[in-house]
Image (cartoon, rainbow over all chains, first blue to last red; front, side, top):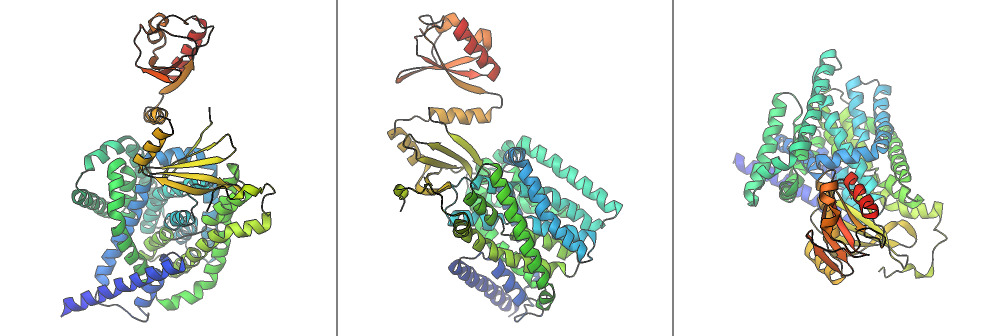
Length: 397
Length: 161
């Protein structure tokens, strides 16, 4: 009887998430905010508290986080990361200063600990590559001139995550004590060594792992990733960081194959992860932090917009392109939740989870709307260019 | 020759852009998977490009062949990316070069500069891997591979002897 109950509950949760994914598709908004809300409803104090499958959901959420970061690492090769950093360093610096500081300062103003403030800085810093990649695709902006700049900023944020997450993991364990800072330093040195190593061996490693059989490739990559995550956890480096690094180290056909094979698994477990984050919160904790989330959201939407605007301007992009770059970068999502998720698990600050969830909810919904409206609004303010000629159709449907 | 701007699209591939003689700007996105997309610039916004066409790797090759181009340039560029410090160049043989009417062997390019002549382009024809007995004519293009420094030396050598 018990197994029937487990299956019913689990099936119910997944069907629920499926319905939400359809609703999101119909409304043209990202799925993340809806999954978070669903998690809140299923969690303690929610309308439909789950009891039986909590363990399963917890492991599922862990795998979701690992796959999210693994696939993020997979998007880019070590070589791409390093060359992009070289070209776009000023934009990357502006991005970090403009978007990390508001969160960190807000934490300090709220009277939070240093570690909790660093977490909030991470939450406001990182844009959602998942949401933004989809926006560029949906709005047909892949060929635009500002797109390489948007993607470069996302890549560098990814690299920054590889350094930030181990620092955070060490600080969460050791606190901002000398021991904590020491562990953080060692972790960062380790990551940098690994990245340099990856830069040298990525081709050989990927060749070793590659298999023509989809089944063998799927199991090899999934197995290695989860195993490495487990080893990292054993040494108290975050599992998520290990997954990210394994992703960065893979390239070539092995990476192409992994991308196609693991994407559906990532979608399933990431949905469980987002729901789980909502699930572990009490809905009554949300209203007290909502005001702060709105203020922080408005400020950091503005600072992200400024980052994109300025970075695009550096490459000689016109006003409309600058507006598109700025607005597209506003969306925060999976990685802000991942950062907050690490901190919630170690209980540094009770308000952190609810604040991060409300914040991501807001910006995951506002980001795509802003990206869509950037063009018409820019048109109104800047006005269409005088150069509008009669042959505007250009064969364009 | 048309100037092509090339930018990396991290995570996706490479974006190329060039302007036609009619003043139309064309964008090409080459995905890592080999898929190619063709874009036209939006006449109202120089930074916005509208997608016109998507092609698989093979379709793109077919189209390139129909259009009369060859993939040599692209493949050379790929090779150049893979080997750091490798330079590939097309060098014209000017009318006043001392090697007009002489052979590649006479110029002793490889022994003097370390650079290899991998092909000679003459009008519509290309001669791959020309031997030392290959006679040079004014207007020939020498496709050379070597270090950037070595290629500069070849330019000097072809000009002065």
